[in-house]
Structure formats: structure tokens, C-alpha cells
Amino acid sequence: MDGVLMTLPHAAPRGPAPPGLRLEWTDSPEQERLVADADFEPGSLVLREEFLLRGPAELPPLAMFRPVPAEVGTVEIQGEPGFPRAVIFDNEHMKLLFEFLNSETEIQQEVLAMQDSMHPASETMQSTTKVAEWLISQELPWLEGLDFLSLSRLLRLFCVNSHPCKAAGSTSGLLKWGTMINHSCLPNVVYSSVESADGDAGVDGCEEGRFEGHFRACRPIKAGDVLGVSYMKLQVALAPLTQRRRMLWYLKGFLCECDRCRFEAANGDPSRVLPCAGNATNCAGKMKMTRCLSGLNSLGTDASDALDGFSCTSCGSRAMREQVELEAELSHAVLGALCARWSGLKSAKEALWELQARVEGELHHDHFAVQGLRLLFLALEADEILKGKGEHDGQQWLRELNRVSCWHESIRPGQNGDLMLMLSFKSLAPALRKLKGEHGKSDPESLEALDRSASTVLSMDDAWDKLPE
Ligand SMILES: [Zn+2]
Ligand SMILES: [Zn+2]
Image (tube, rainbow, N blue to C red; front, side, top):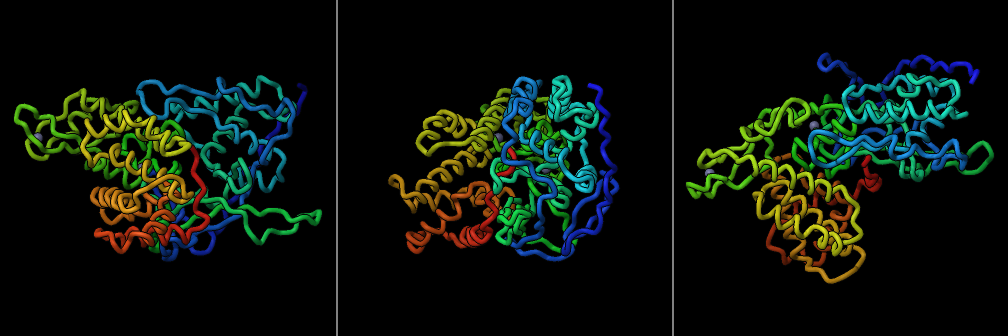
């Protein structure tokens, strides 16, 4: 190649935040974050904006645009077993790269104002670096002149900032303001992509879709609150600190230091409960976590920290090593099940009956793994109830959902847990509404709180976009 080296333009200044929001600087960690400048009710729209850059639904059908081979972009997670097992390069980023290289300089400048930082030791950093090296080595005509440093920076930037845009097909995009919203394991906004009804007429006169990113309040937000969204599927927010931090570390390249993670690291994780191991005394108590440290083996803690963390609230016994290892294994398996795509309740129950028996036999019923599987089965049953498939005991379903909701309320009081449960699985709210109409009056247990959450969730009619895998 005799190609002229392509130099990326300078980043553009960000300018004033949209109405109702403001940018705020923090010193430690040093970062800019988006803060509410007004109060927002649950369900209300906090931020809507058109995509700054959006990948095409498909790349041109030419050999030079073929996907990066899986073996290039996949990096196995070493060290600790769990879910997920590997970091996989997202080929949607190639569409963003294509769109970026074909955009106006002004758009490129806005994109380059976004941050691209990733921990240098993270698997996701290794994955983007390997992909950038491979792309350079292919001497692809559409990437001519783009050097390794610029290319790897762009790939990191897409990995850190892209939001799925399912409304426009299988693609993703970049949002100038939405990307300023930090991750939180206790999010106060949820994200969705939306095709706007007031689409502008395109240059050739045909109706062109206008695609927007929407962020809606999922809890009451007060002026001055920092906005937080989940970078993971919302099911992951139900999982223990260790699993959440592990996933964010491996897939996004940072250690989560959100308020919830910091609190649980210091005070123990309420979603991890084991039956007492003090067999000698025949204690029927339960062991709770008193602290978790970082929650990640690869960041300097090991299993002995977890042993210290669990102690019986009745007799003071500590957990045994095998018990702690088994708890980790079962938690990862359940999180994998929650994030998997199931074709129906029957196949899920067949595939998971053994896991369910182990989880219920080995862990306390207040453990995330026990309640998580219950919630998954309720959600899959709700799909069938809504489709009118099979026979179902509606009252039983309502009682079960109420139990899972009570569990969530007991471990995280006052945190709008019902709303989070229903946002995790989109069939829960409409099924609750349907069954409550049929059985609600004869049910002895109060479903009022659940019903209020269902109303909010159903009013968020565009809040159904799933977050990145
Ligand atoms: Zn967190
Ligand atoms: Zn005990």
C-alpha cells in the first residue's frame, strides 16, 4: 500500500446538556457524569436523542466486509471458571466502523469526544487488540490508511459506547448524551431504541426512519441524582456482586464501583445465603456474607476471603471451602440460565431440573440462585399464558410471583424491586395484569404493589429493548 495515512480529526467540545439534565465533574474517579436537573416519575422519559452514528442493518455483500473470524476475536477467560466463559468480539462494531469512516468530519469529531478506556489487562482489551491486528494484516481496501493505533482506539470506543438499536434491525449506534450515563447495578433509568413516528422525509422524498435512544426513569429520580443505566441485561442486576463485577470486568473492562457494589463489598451481599454448615451443633441457622472484598478472584482476592465472608447468624460457624466453591458454581450456572434464550417452559425445565434440585438442596431459599430460577420459570410460563398455550394455574402463578417479589423486597428494601423484576422479563407485567383480572379478587395475598409496578412497566411501551448480551 502506498496509502496516505488517515489521521483522525480532533474531538469536538461537548456543549450544554439537554433540558432537564446537567453534566457534573467528579474528582475521584475523575470523570464527567450526567445528573438530573429536575425530578422524574417512574416511567417518564428522562432523555431522548437521535443516534449520532448508526451502523447499517447489513454491510455490503463483498468479501472485504466479511465478519472477523470467531477464533480471532474470542478470548477465553482464564483463572476462574464461571459465566461467561469467553469474551467474544461483537461484529456489529464493524458496521459502526464502516459508518464512521463514511461520516462527515463533524460527526467523527463528536464520536471521538467519547471515552475509550478499558483496563489494559482485561480480556475485552485483548479481544479488540487482536481484532485490530488481524484487520490491519488483511490489508483491506476499505481500511486503507488507517493505522493500528487509530483502529484499535475506534474498536475500543465502539465497545465502550455502543447501544443496541434493535428498532433499526440487527445493529447498534452511538448516542452523544446517552453514552455519558454511567453503569449502575441499581439503575434509575432503562434504555430502549425507538423508531420515531415523526420521521423526516428523506432527500429522495421517501420516508426515512428516525431512530432514537430513549432513557426512562425506572425509579423516582430527584434533581441532583446521578443517572445510572445497566450496561448488562437487566437479569444480571438480580445476581450477586461477584457475578456482576465479573461480567462487567470481562466484557466491558472495568471494575464496577457503583454505590450498590461498594456497599455490598463492605457490608456483605444480601443475595448470598447458605444453610449453616455447623453440623456438629445441628444448627438450623443460615450463613450470610459479612463482606466480599473486591468480589473478583483475578483482582487479588481468593476463595479464603469468601470463607471469611460467610458466617452463621445463629452459631457463628464459618462456611466450608467445598460449600463456597459449590455456591459459586451454582450461581454462575443460574446466571447463565437467566441470560440464555429458551424456546419454552418445557424445554427449560427439562434442561434445568437437575440444576434446580441442586440449587434448592445446597443453598438457602433466600439465595439468588433459588429465586432466580423461580423467576425464570415464572417468566417462561407467563409467555405461554399470554399466548394462550397449555394449562396453567393462574392463582399459583400469582402467589409465586408475589413470593419472589417479597424475597427481593426483603434483601433490598425500598428499591423498587418489583419494577426491576418485571423489567428483567418482559412477559411478567402483562401476565400479571391478565391473571389479576381473572383471579385477583379471590387471592388472599396482596398484589397491589406488584400491580402498581406492572402499570408503570406497561406504560413504558418502548422500554423493551434488551441490553447487550
Ligand atoms: Zn455495580
Ligand atoms: Zn449455625
